[in-house]
Length: 456
Image (cartoon, rainbow, N blue to C red; front, side, top):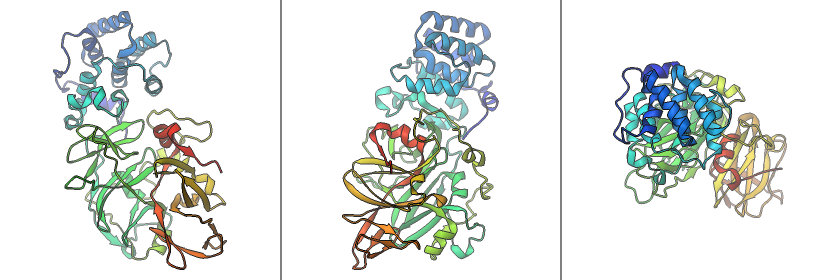
């Protein structure tokens, strides 16, 4: 989700939309910040002088928008921001965004809303459904408007797959054995969704095993989360798409009924009509694993066809190749790297009123971990080479595996592993617990001190 500054400048150009009537047109702050992109040289210089004399850093969020897309004016804008804040980040938009995240006490001047809205609607007027003025009041949003970033695509520029065509495993000859897939099994309905396809779409809306679900895959934060989309009290399941916006390097998805923006990582609406609804989507288990492994254990699985209705290069290792291979992030976000690198993988569980993460590296040479979350005992089985982790409740049992992968409890009883439960010889079942893989930075940034991390 990226685009060059040059290509954005061409979008703004002469065809930019007219100023909205969201703020008094004679307000000098509004006119000054707007001059960064839409004013002549004289107006721009006068505006920057005025902001320096005014001396309040509350205009920095708006200036950041102007600097990101400001063509040849970024150096002058940066000097004003440095004067107002006393910090030196030059024209480094990335570092300025991190500074902004570190300083939530700075409340943006009200002119940020009409200015940033004008800029974003100049990219895609379809963004208007997300950016209605009444939705952008600070006390009605669950996230900071100044931290919402354009990801480089228009609304639905990353198209969701809605009830896509599926084929049998035998017909999926386009897949290589080591291709990774999202494996889902609900009520005996087994599906595989290759990451090499989902990376281009980042969302599917399906009914699996009679349950309406959506897989929200944020490529930037490495997380694919399976949400149940039927919510109590609503007549129809939600259907989701990708908005084109990011928040702290995480995609903001939207529902097609109300056009509310949702946090992909938490399954909660954050901007729009549903922001104060209290809705939190229920998670269902999903696993990432190799295609050959999934196919062997689920011979009746169905898998995505290449006939998605879109022309993309669905080859192995194509989508986001450079990003996945790099230790760097594409968009700015604060992250504590004192113990883990920002793109280390963790397995994340948010259940039972608690949140806990297990580093994928913890499963090296230790395929079973007996642990707990929120007072609930868990057993986790992981394989770092396949990026796979599954979690189950374990009751009072302590589990281990033999060298050939057989799961045994403390008494030596053999348990059967299924996608929905652990099954004892007497038929007793311990249910699967929903979780997902994620880059460390997303877990750390969204949950921080509210979550715990397995330390071995």
